[in-house]
Length: 187
Ligand code: AR6
Image (cartoon, rainbow, N blue to C red; front, side):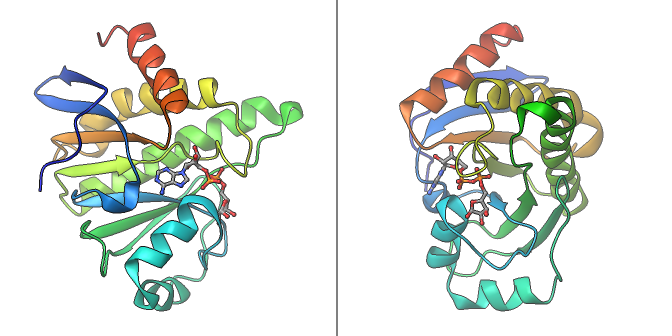
């Protein structure tokens, strides 16, 4: 099934970067990324939505992974999701006092998720706006880090990827990603 109409699309070296406003659990891509916590055993926000949509087998597979450190990522099957895989990554909890470290950790979430997509030779992946909900990372800064990191890491970490989706849950998040596309000269 085709994805919803993008808010904005950019072509970079024959790869497509899309900004969508959608519920990530509905997307028909090779992998969706989950903004999880270090236990990988579920939670609220996008994590809760993904576990509800995927079925309890996802939680059972997550139990075998023994958690995930902040800034890293692990992959599972997608079970009842349209997405074949879920890449679970753990974003930093925002703290202004540790802004530089938090920025590095958020970038690492995108890089390690892309590396897993590359390792599994996936062609398409959709990211939510990691850390911008319960973890309170400033949404404009997070969008800039997301787009910048995907742009720089994509060729080396995940040459198989033909399409990367920035899946925004609302229009406001999409505007931050649109701004980042503009600032980085993509449109
Ligand atoms: N589709 C796309 N985006 C979504 C969806 C959805 N279905 N639901 C929420 N968002 P959050 P975090 C957006 O809080 O800040 C969990 O309890 C949301 O609007 O899900 O990384 C975990 O277990 C926001 O922009 O993740 C962790 O404990 C973005 O997804 C903790 O929350 C991220 O919001 C992780 O916090």
